[in-house]
Length: 416
Image 1 (cartoon, rainbow, N blue to C red):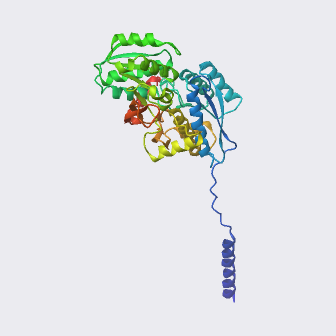
Image 2 (cartoon, rainbow, N blue to C red; image 1 turned 90 degrees about the horizontal axis):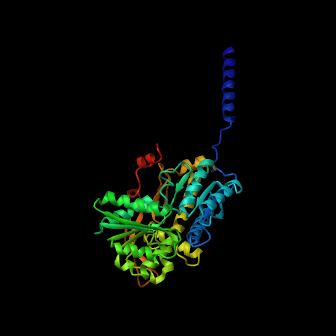
Image 3 (cartoon, one colour; image 1 turned 135 degrees about the vertical axis):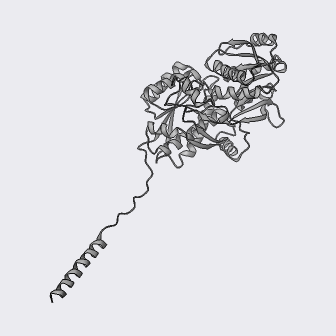
């Protein structure tokens, strides 16, 4: 009897334990929820929207807006990317004031833009002081990501060192030894001249610099300067100028016959945005470098970008400024997705080493200096029957990794 009672009690205990186990709630797997931003991501754009350089500012804005239209279909971290703009009037002081206004009054998360190199450097210093990410998308001073680079500064345009090195590689293969440098006396002019000449001397030590000619920015009458250069009879002239100043050089070189007598190279001289306003009267045979053409590379990705741009902007072709700003928007979205939070420091960490696909192929934001690594193209202007303006022909692509300064050299420039 006692044994039977023991068996019944044991069975009862086991049953209670089993029931208890069965009744224990099983923890359900946590639902996968994408990180959410508490509000829209706000980008403050400082660029030039008045005067001749406005062509670059407006092209960049169109590229940025096109990318946002694509990005905001799905959003980033559950939110949209918004933007607000300010006109720097191509003046560094105004650019800096506008950047401060965007940060202090508009409370933007990121600053971007700027055609003007001096304005870029001024805003970059402010961005460092206030720990606001700043992305330069058109200006080309190598100091932005070189000597004066820092954690909060990024550059999605090709800088002067990259352009100069790509140009020098191609020029070194030409049968020229006697060079002259001529250009506008401002930050970008000296930056591109120094980068090109220093690279050319390393690649081809026998080259000689016969002389230099500099004029003030906006100088309308270039005939006396080109006459001086022509009388020296150099083999080749490196023109260190950009924007409307470069357009003036091309016009005068054509009208005076300079471009028919002396070979010349100008970075961005083969850009669509530069050549289209000149129409069929632009000078043929001018060497140049650029990092984007709407007709090259002839890939599905570039064709899709061009079609989307033309559909959005009345059949206009995208320029390099359009491409840079478009790529910048894509980088911003990708970085926030990678960071998983609307946080400036996490955004910067995510940007470093970030790779994305673009109309010219995959590009990378180099971690050591925050400079976008992208290819540079060398070509020469030519009039072709199917176009009403000159385009670049005989294009040679130089890989981005082959035009970048060494990270160790960047650290030396920054005194580290």
